Image (cartoon, rainbow, N blue to C red; front, side):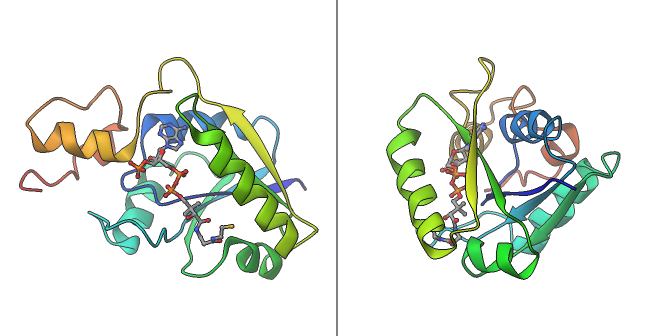
Length: 157
Ligand code: COA
């Protein structure tokens, strides 16, 4: 069985993330959406909240698992015997950082490789921070966020 991890902070999970996941599921048999920690980011939703929201959103997709992890992605990969990481690439400066991260992950665990998918035209300019900012200013973000997750965006933050 071909399995992969799709890691991110997913604060919140957007339709851009959903697009990458669904396309990657055409290639991999099972993908774990891994709610991970990015040290530089202060999250709006707790890790548990994010896991719950993404699980609810993906309830009809049995090949998508959702988990959380506070350590290095490669440690999770080793522990679960997974050899592939899926990442979306946006044409907005992602490449250098992604290349560096993929190289470091491979250095830490030579069994692992990163598979990049280009973000689709509808989503290349989306980011979780922009969604949160628009929402904070009262703008409709339904075009960018799955419905179930949209309902959980807290109005005051
Ligand atoms: N569509 C729309 N938006 C997308 C997207 C897509 N396809 N792909 C990414 N984005 C957005 C994200 O929402 C995020 O927005 P934000 O910065 O406003 O929150 C932004 O692009 C960056 O996303 P990403 O590159 O996935 O960063 P991240 O912070 O979500 O995830 C981790 C980074 C968690 C994967 C990384 O820090 C990590 O691996 N941490 C674990 C520790 C570890 O192993 N570190 C060693 C690395 S060598």
